[in-house]
Image (cartoon, rainbow, N blue to C red; front, side, top):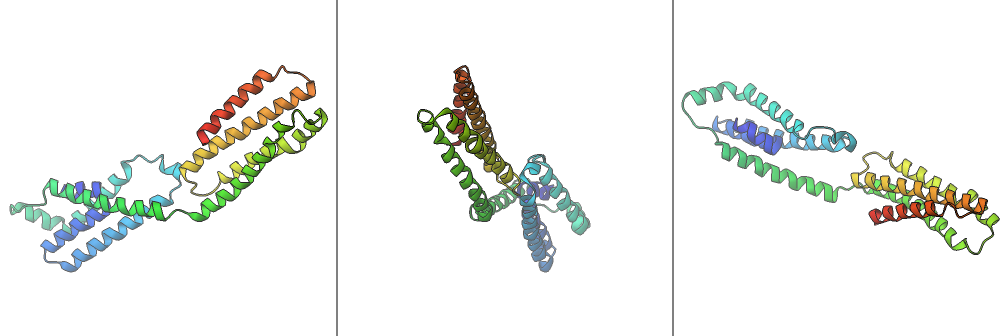
Length: 245
């Protein structure tokens, strides 16, 4: 019971420690040392495996499932390796770790693991992935800057020139931006914050295309009947930009 509680809270590290303590009590120091080493290795392998699972899949796994699985495994190992001895220990009226002490060991293990995970997250960021993403976003930003200059041309260029720019440069560049975002969405292990950013950038690009297509129609038809719709789209664009900034 106590090993199960500690393992659930502190993972394989806590299990390895407590199983090792049992072996120490049985005067088996080698097995005690090996148990702790196995607990450490199992913890590393466990979290390495978890980090390798794509984020969209890990989000679908119930939070309690993994702790329940490794707790069951730990209790099975205890029963297999020490079950008979522990049963005899209990029948002789000897004491075990208290629930509070087991919980304390589990929490200490949890703190150690959390510190390790924090260090991994802080120092182990995949720079190559971020560099690859940033390279794509540089092109996105360049396209954005070049196309927004169009608004300065509305009162200086002829309608024919404006329509030509929209058809050959402005709208195609925003379609390219959509391709850029879709391409980055296919990167392996894309962090959740970049996935969320991509959703906004994709919506932003679609709205830009919609706005420019409406402007194109207004120029071609020489009408202002699309003005309200253009204003509405620009308002949506501003809302997206606020979320991105």
